[in-house]
Image (tube, helix red, strand yellow):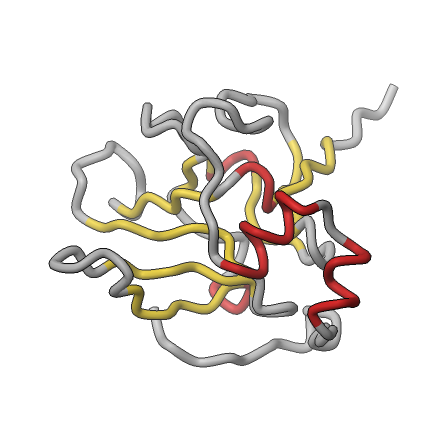
Length: 148
C-alpha cells in the first residue's frame, strides 16, 4: 500500500470534476460519503450481505474496483473485501481523523472518491489478512453474465 495517485493503461483516464459537477452527478448522501469522506450507517447498505457474483464498480466514476470472489462476511456492518481487483484501482491515504486511532483510507484511483478503509491483522481467514471495509453507497454491482 502506497500513498501514490497512479493509473495503469487498463484504467480509464482520471476523472476530475468540480464540486458542483459532482453534486449534479451524485445524490446528497452519495456526495457526502464519496466526496466528503463520510460513512454510511452500519448494517443498512445495499451490499452488506450480498452474495451475488459480479464486479463492484465505483458509483462515482464506474471504475472496476472489487470482484465478488474477493468479498467475505466480516460481520462489521459494511461490505468487506480481502483485496481490490488490482492494486492500481485504489489509492491509500493516512487517516488520522479519529485521535489515537490512525487508519488507512481507501480511495478510487480514477476519481479520488472516498470508498472506506482497509484494516490489517484482524485474523480473518482470507488470503491477505486484510479487510477492505467499503461503504455500499460507494459501489455499484455489475452482475456476472450467465450464458444460457
